[in-house]
Image (tube, rainbow, N blue to C red; front, side, top):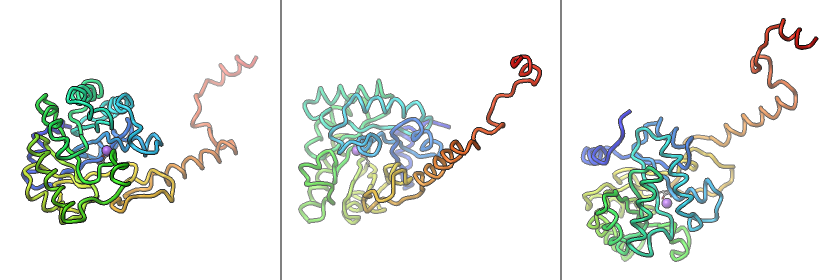
Length: 279
Ligand code: KIV
Ligand code: NA
């Protein structure tokens, strides 16, 4: 398997072939995403909520992100891998942003970073890009700012909101972002932004006119207990929870009833040796 490069991603975009991005948060989830031939793996800070059980993404530290990046990058042979810069690891100064971006690349072994924010983050995006680190921007619903957005809410539904999104999209493109994630915005707005930009847009809850799509693996693979809240845009493609639960219940039953481990799961010894041992 050849490594997906930024050039390969650009040619997918030029050909009009949708770019498929999926999150991975650890070694096994990265392994399966890569085996499926996903173009881009994102070590998203959704990690905080879906894999570490935190209330929101604001709790995640750079150290924690780096640890998970290391486990993901060890499994990925092909996909272009990027990581979210966690809240508080890039906003203080350009130096802080550069230092954090260098750490996830050098220690986490990922190829690029994702930074939430539009116009206001453009100078930061430029600095990180200028340092040779590919940046994916992220506009629309930016979960790290849920407290100031008033929760996980659709963005750009009003004309003013949509115009602001377009302004953000242009700003991050001009700053050097090589791609932009559009989260939870009406499909018409995402379609317009996609047509106007010369960099790929990756949608999540943004309709199918984007240059690609991203989902959180744990959500789309159904790796969570029934009844959990799911955003409207999530399509569940598998039932990993159901499969795991079935297997684990069976294991429990077989241990309780001594069906497991049967002979085939044990290490044989010659009958003579057994006899001598027992003497
Ligand atoms: O953290 C994440 O998983 C993300 C994607 C959902 C875009 O930012
Ligand atoms: Na994220």
